[in-house]
Image 1 (tube, rainbow, N blue to C red):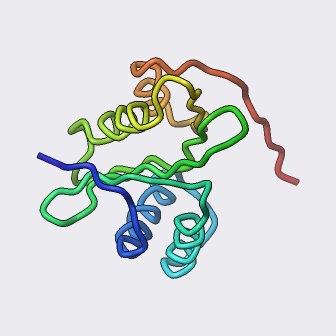
Image 2 (image 1 turned 30 degrees about the horizontal axis):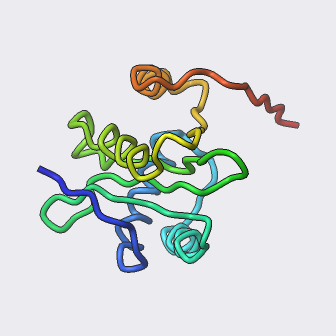
Length: 139
């Protein structure tokens, strides 16, 4: 059983490790170091527009959500579950927590890579609908 807690600076190392897993799973070609990812996360957590929550199991972050306030919506920057804890409901629990935390007044937006069909299915199951598509060209 996991509990949901607010993310703080003391979780930086664990969040950096999970962020590295996410980048590997996405097939990200950028070679971002653990220390860079921790530094970036530290900056977000110090920013008043950002907030996050983690699912904790036995003192370890099993999953986390990092979001920020935009003009008229909440943008989910990252939703990551440790490989060991996937398909156990942690991501759903965190999204539900965000909705409860915000009340019904806000819209939630997030990005999904086009090749991540399992994530698209997951978010659709939770009521998310396609909104726009960004395109990229490598030169």
